[in-house]
Image (cartoon, rainbow, N blue to C red; front, side, top):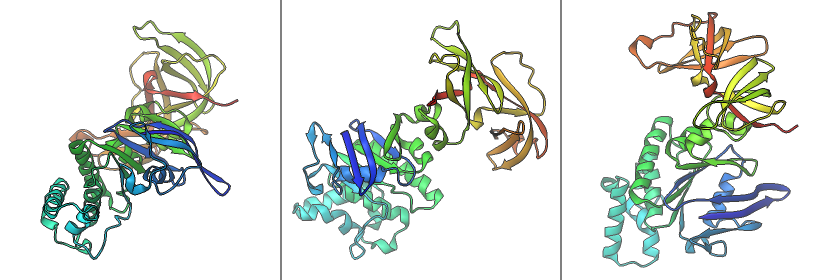
Length: 371
C-alpha cells in the first residue's frame, strides 16, 4: 500500500498534512501518536469511510480511493468491536460471507477455520454478552479476516481491555499476523504496544508524520524532540556543539563535545558530523545511566560523570526509578533494573549522595534546532 500526498481538512482545521507512506506487503505497520494527531482519520481514509481533500492511496498500483469500502481489499477491526448482539459468535463471523451468498457448506468450513485461528471454536454458539472483552475482540478479528483482505486495519483494538489482557491480546494478535501473513495497519497511542509488535512505526503529531522506522530506530535514534519525549522516557536538553573530532575507527564516527546549560560539558559519539556552534538537542535514556554510591574507578575520557542527590526513589519490583538532582537546574531520571535476587531492594535511598555516569556512545544528538 502506498499513501501519496494525502491531506484532509475539517472546517479550518487541517487534520492531515501531505502524508506520504509506503507500507510493504505482509508488514505489521503502526500509526502511533497522541489523540488528535490524525492517525484515526488516516485509517478511515484507507478504509473508505472518509475521503481526502487531495492525494492517492494505491494497493498493487491501483488507486482505491474511488472504490466504496465494500469493494476495497481492506477490512477494519474497530475499537468497540461492533458485533451484532443478537447473533452468535458463529453468525457474527459468517455474516459478511452470507451476504456474498457463498454455499452453506463452504460457509461452515470457512467460519470454523477462522474460529480455530482465533481459538474460539468452543464458543461458536455463544452470544457476545456471554464473552469476555478479549474474546469479543477475537470475534471481531475473525469476522474481518474471513473476507481475506489484503490489508487489515486495526483502530486502537485493545484500548477497552485491562492492562494484563491487553498484553496477552497483543501477543495473540502478533501470532495471528505471523500465521496469515497479510498487511496489518495498527493505530495506537500506546508506545509500548507499537514497539512490541511492529515491523515499522510511523510517529505522527499534529497531522504530520515525524519519523518512520523500526522500533529500534524510533527508540534509539529519534528524529526530533517530540519523538524523543513521546517514545519511552528520556532526559532531553538543549545544547550547543563545542568541538568535533574524528575517531580512528573502521566506521566513520565523531567524538562531539556539547555544552549543556544545565549540566556543563557532555561527550557524545555520533555518526553525523556536526559543526562547532550548532544548536542541537541532546538525549540520554534513563536506563543507560549508571548510579552508585561510590565514584566509578574508570579513567576513560568518554565517560560523563556527575554527582547528585537522590530526591525520589520509586521502587517497582523489577526496577527502581531515581530522580537525582545534579544542581539547581537539572534533575535526571535514572532507571536501575533488578536482574538478580540480591537486587530485591534498592541500596540507594532518599537523600543519598550518588555518582551518575554514562558512556558517550549511549547519548544521542537528536538534531539541529531551528535558530
